[in-house]
Image 1: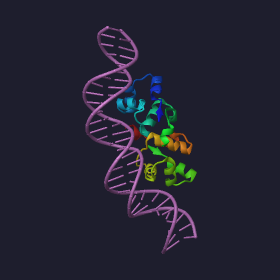
Image 2: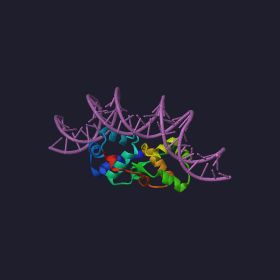
Image 3: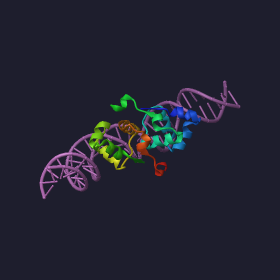
Image 4: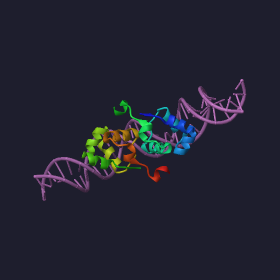
Length: 68
Length: 68
DNA sequence: TCTAATTGTGATATTTGTTTTACATTTGTT
DNA sequence: AACAAATGTAAAACAAATATCACAATTAGA
């Protein structure tokens, strides 16, 4: 699964630490997520979409490998 | 977090077992999710949205308690 | 270039999602 | 009522998400 959190963050010009605070997770969670190291829970994904005021599917997109 | 998987499933008139197979998870996962016993990963949520051909935010919605 | 801010990384611990197996309960049909 | 299909539930095990702490590497500004 891919995500465009880094881009959304850039649009708002906020740091990982800022976003972490807003989303109420640790900075490392944001960092690891941006680096594609893991997939967030749906609650966290919804929170981020809400914070960025963007459809969740605009931020998170499935890849073929997500169906294996 | 709330979800309307049961409703979407009813629209398509398929069983939990059917959906489980389509979404490539166990039937218990679908069941527990419908009963609100836990929150799926974003990958699974995206798969379901894609299967139902509905925006993810139409199926999964945050509640106030999801921000605590 | 120095320095501070930001980002990346590693290890460990805890919590939560998911599977499997197996059985109980409910619902729908005949 | 009896039977089958669908749904709910429980426990154990494993996988994955998230936190925390600590430090290294990179980037941006003065």
